[in-house]
Amino acid sequence: MTLVQLRHLISLAETGSFTRSAELLFITQPALSRSVAALEQELGQPLFDRVGRRSELTPFGREVVQRARQLLFEADELAASGRQMSAGQAGRLRLGLGSGPGALLMAPLLQAMATRHPGTVLEIARGDIHLLEHALRERRLDALVIDARSLSPAADLHVGSLAELRGAFMVREGHPLTRWTGALRFAALQQFPIASTPLSEEVARILVERYGPTAHPAHCVTLRCEEIPPLVDVARHSDAVLLAIRAAAPDLVELALAPALDARARFGMVTLAGRAEPPGLHIVRSLVEALLHD
Image 1 (tube, rainbow, N blue to C red):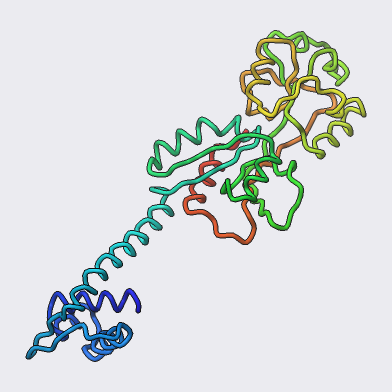
Image 2 (cartoon, rainbow, N blue to C red):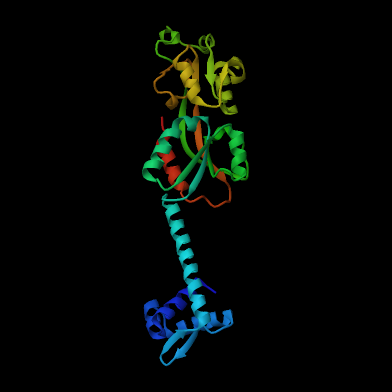
């Protein structure tokens, strides 16, 4: 039994004529006859009585037509739902955001979805990257947007590149380091609290290469938090030095160290490898790509 056969059945029930139904369905009359006969054979009972040139439903046929209409309605609704989800007009997406992406994306992404795709339910989770990774594997999240450098390579995960954003040391306006004369060395920063989110091993390696062993985050970071916004507030209202994505705190003053930091966060979207992409995720990906920039 197929949906096509059920559509043939309903058309014949409405017209009572094989000739007329075949014309409306754009098929030949013999093809329509074979379709209805196959359905009758599968169901084990006749669906129509042939009365002269007219075909009338049997009592069993009337019951089948009634249920066929409901089945076709549900099938059409499913197809419409799929189209709406693909267009971002319906459906549900569960997105995990790392600290950097969360600081930059939370409000503008929610606003963009509310404005452009109000029919889609977007749920955002924040937290430790390892917890987000676990939730993705358990199918409690559909995708992650994180600093790809902080994720260990795994065969079951697919990482798609989104953007690279520059990192920087930043302080409030009027901070003593903004009045520093001569080359600003890392040792000068260590006179003050240094605030940062947990950093990847690659960033730690860059810091050590640029500024020596004491610049390793395990030694120099005195204020550590999973979320960037609280650290930005601390830097705004104290002498703390913030190490973060430059775009996360545009109102802070960037320090020009010698040598330059020259480190970038590589943000990526992580999904389960070999699994079908949730409908509408391509829309969120496009919005994220547009929002992530220095």
